[in-house]
Amino acid sequence: MSMLDEAYQQLRHSGPERDGWLSNHAPMAVEALVRHGHEAEVPRWLDGYADRLEERPRGIAPIVADEWRDPLGDPVRTGDWLDHFDRELADEPWRDVLARWWPRLLPGIAAGATHGVIRVGHAVRALLDQETAPRVTELGQGLAYWAARWQPLAPPGAGPYPVTDPRTALDAVPRVPDQRAGIRARLAQLAELPHWPAAAGAVPETTVTSALSDAAVACAVPDTTVTSALSDAAVACAVPDTEETAGVDRDPEAAVPERLAGIVAAAVARHGTHGYANPVMLVHAATAPNAVLRTLPALPRVLWAPSLAAAWAATAAVTAAYAPAVGQLGPPPGPELDAAEVMRRAVDSGDAHAIKFADAGIETYARCGDPGLLAASVRATEQIAA
Image 1 (cartoon, rainbow, N blue to C red):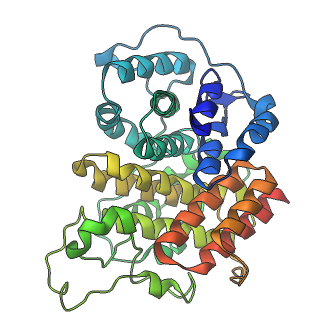
Image 2 (cartoon, rainbow, N blue to C red):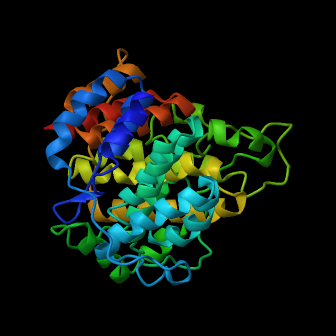
Image 3 (cartoon, helix red, strand yellow):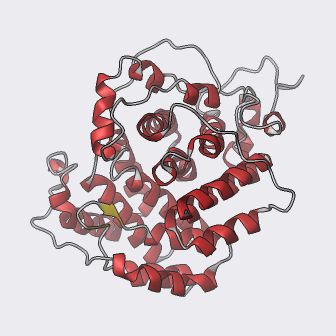
């Protein structure tokens, strides 16, 4: 049994939360550790996290298949949701269960401060590598957590909206006026923001054409119109139209992975300039859409467009809730920085959010090679550990 499967087995009887609300980050963090070659660190990391784990909650009553809407978003039924997905995944292939529940859960993407979708994204990435029983179980626990904490955001507007790149779109997101409370109180303020519907509806565009669709999931190249605010290397991350691709009809669904990747890249880079105010919570502006991006290969293509819209809404919501009004100078790329060093620093910090953000930053860097993303990841680790 692999180290990841052993860790999942060890964690399977723990609940998705502690202290009534705080997320259990262990399954997500250990998946990221293993992904980046730190299997040897997993036992020690889990030992250090053990006092933050609570027992899996017991169920109250079985969730009836055709009455699933009533208990959706009810954390008291967390144990029932865990039992429900155990049963479904025992009877059906995990991809079928995911395809059925993804559109049901997607409108509530803010669940658990977006940790529901993030946990599912880590589980799906592990399953796409290798299908094992512990990984299927972990997917079920992620889906159950998402269902129990299902939380919709204030709806976006209908548009039409101007086409913009991800960084410009993030800069245009309005801030909630009262930033003293927790995330639920902050997100509740979105409905009162006059400019929220426009910001949430203006999903950033991309210029990658349908001729590149075969490599979409593997490459997920960001928007070609990314501004210099991201970094001087951002333009090199883009794929421009060529003589072969110019004039080719663009398939909106084929462009979804690139558009999502552009959102993730912008959120990682913007953390480098705006993460100082609340470095822990702002990481979810990047890790939530990255979880959706990881899940796309396991989803029916018809679900890609709504996944993009929901991911952008989550990024915009976290940005509205936690980004300060004024940014700082971005961290300069360091010549000594590489992906291994970025993850090493995150692992040394021991913090789950630092590890998961470094994971997202490294993935994004691998897609486009912008060293500014690695620098932003290191700065996030430093700020979280401070």
